[in-house]
Image (cartoon, rainbow, N blue to C red; front, side):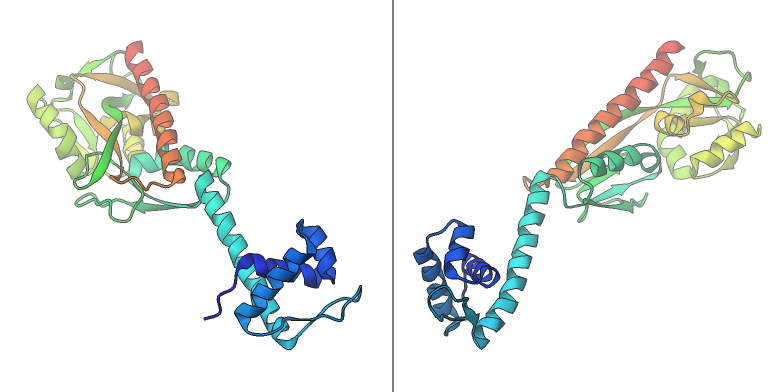
Length: 304
């Protein structure tokens, strides 16, 4: 294997472009003897002369071996430059990040998160993966948003205490909070059963309320459309209510629930010390977005 130093190849390129050892030395900030020493070291590494030296002010010429070394050397220098640039981008926060997510986070948190990351690092590569409801795993992902803590060697950050609200058509209930008991016997539009069973059914059972589920959908937009159509009321977490801009919809009314069921919105990442700057910045931005969402929910509750 030929063992050459990149700085020697860079000196060779400068000589070819400037024509003489002296002019190359002036451009590089070396003495002419230093340039000669570097070319001698390069020629020793490749096993032959790379330049014909006519002497005096006349330009040097490449030998056939030199032409081969120059061609390959330019490619090596270009690759080295790309490597240096990539490392610089990584240290500055660029690079690639893989994020696991689910519906509410995808609609509400991620758009702002991705926009801010790309504003700061336009060349960063952000890839998303939908998390399965039955067995979510961190795997090779850098970050995972989920509504429960994940098992394994992960760091868990509870971003949001996601309180559930009752959503009705405007005027169907007096303004202000509502008891869970008011849902007893009422037509409801529900989420998919796994979500309802996990978060809502225990709270409804404890309150002695048994609503009649008229329709189920995994999509928050569909659920709210059904509420507008009068098919029933819905109980949705604040993240879904906020993301669907329900507070701005005069066809709908929001009521805080008493007692208030809640779920957690968690952010997970590997429990190691080797996080990329891009992942670290994503966590910082996620915290800021979560604080804004939490403050908006607290304001709605306080108004009631």
